[in-house]
Length: 149
Image 1 (cartoon, rainbow, N blue to C red):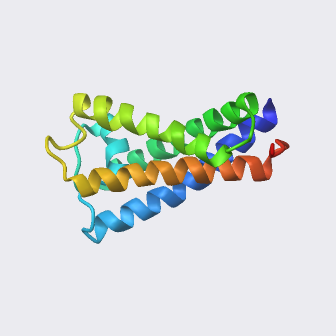
Image 2: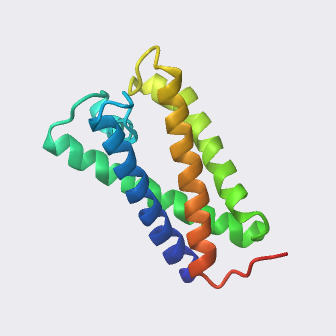
């Protein structure tokens, strides 16, 4: 139990940091107009765009807390459902989370523009798939879960 929580939280943190840095970089280079960190920080600020330093700190803290939570969720899922196709299972779970967040929660909260570009939404979907697959890989690699054949 403790191993699953610790491994899941640390795996989620590692994947979340990498995903967040990629998103922030693409946002600052103006390749993407939506930033996963700003959307996460929108839980408290209710807005997107350039965040002041305190908003950015809160946004990163929210992002890392959610990353750890989703890492624990992935580790628990893999513990109960098995590790066959583990990267696909992690990616599928994060696709469901993406659909719930971007499709329902974020528009209701006002943390996503009314008509975002398809490319931006597609990039955020790719971030979620990347996070789920990477977290699943790290959970299986660093836990005592055995890969089923």
